[in-house]
Image 1 (cartoon, helix red, strand yellow):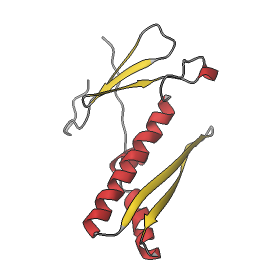
Image 2 (image 1 turned 90 degrees about the vertical axis):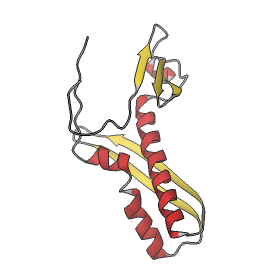
Image 3 (image 1 turned 180 degrees about the vertical axis):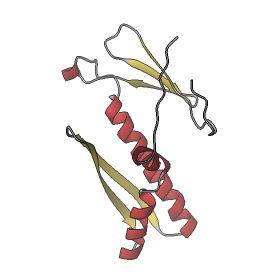
Image 4 (image 1 turned 180 degrees about the horizontal axis):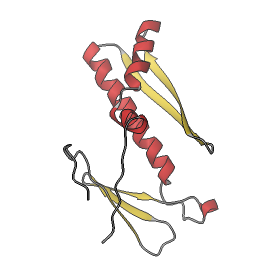
Length: 136
C-alpha cells in the first residue's frame, strides 16, 4: 500500500471463491454481494461492479442534497436520482436526472444541481484520482 498524506476515509475487502463471479464485499461493518449478470456468465446474485459504482454516486448525491436541504429548512419530502452509465472508446459518461417532491422554486432547483455536483463521490470521480495496486 502506498503511503499518502491524506487520512484514510474508508476500507473495503472483496473475496471471490469458486461460485462464478459471486463476490462477498465487506466495508464499514456491512456485507454485500457483488456479481455479474447471467448474460455475463455470472449468477446474478448481487449488483455488478458498474451498478455498485452508480449506487455509490447516487447515494452520496441524495445524502448530500438531503443534508443541504435540511440546513436550509426547505420543504422537500423526497429526492430521487436516476443515473445512466455509457461508455465509448474515448470516455465514460454518466447522465444524472434529479427529481424532487416538495416546495422548490427554479432558483432552489438550480442551487441543488450545483450541490449535487459537489458530493464527495462525484468530486472524486471527476477529480485527481489515483489507484495503487500491489500483490502479496
